[in-house]
Image 1 (cartoon, helix red, strand yellow):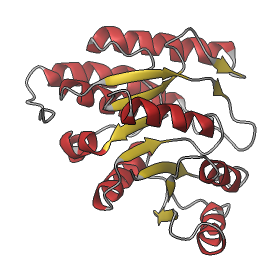
Image 2: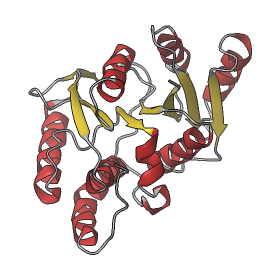
Image 3: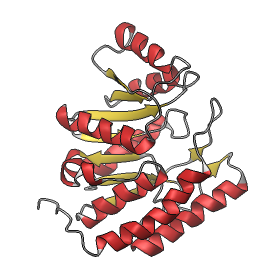
Amino acid sequence: MKNLVIIPTYNEKENIEAIITAVMELPIEYHILVIDDGSPDGTATIVKDLMINKFAGKLHLVERAGKLGLGTAYIAGFKWAIEHKYDYIFEMDADFSHNPQDLLKLYDACANQGADVAIGSRYVSGVNVVNWPMGRVLMSYFASKYVRFILGMSVHDTTAGFVCYRREVLETIELDKIRFKGYAFQIEMKFTAYKCGFKIQEVPIIFVNRVLGTSKMSGGIFSEALLGVIKLKIDSWTRKYPKKNV
């Protein structure tokens, strides 16, 4: 089975070599696709050096001009993964907030337990977040509760950015119709997969706030998520979703 981990980056020079190395050292083989949005700190240069000198054929890079948004980075990565026939496609942050060892749990959920989408969930077994300010923890937790209520999904961590998709999911859900770019992108992907009939499974993880580098979270991104779910729900009343092949 071919596995691809997509890591979007913007100014992650402090983390990028370590996260790539940690993923490459896992007992199951993963390839990595870094989507870099024109990082002025030289993130892409570090990746290119690793591609040549350490991880040839397993590490790949797409460079984009400027910050174009998390959602568009993942869409570009998903299309690249489909084109290159990867079986399992993972979303992951560059900053070690997601433990690379947990990639094995997400893989197991999809490859062995029948899930089409596996979510590394902060909230499925309580609140498993380390080193976040309490205000941000509460905001994130209750936002997921709100999304769950509005959209009717039984997903506890709707804004999670640590996810594994079977390729069929990404081939089915009409990626060009995914509109949101920030945290609402994560909600829209999960909701669309749910409406298409795919099985979603949450895998408990511990989320650890970044130690190095700067967070890209902003109030505007969060507002998009809160308002976006209402639009998603209204649109779902009339949209015809493609269905999972049985």
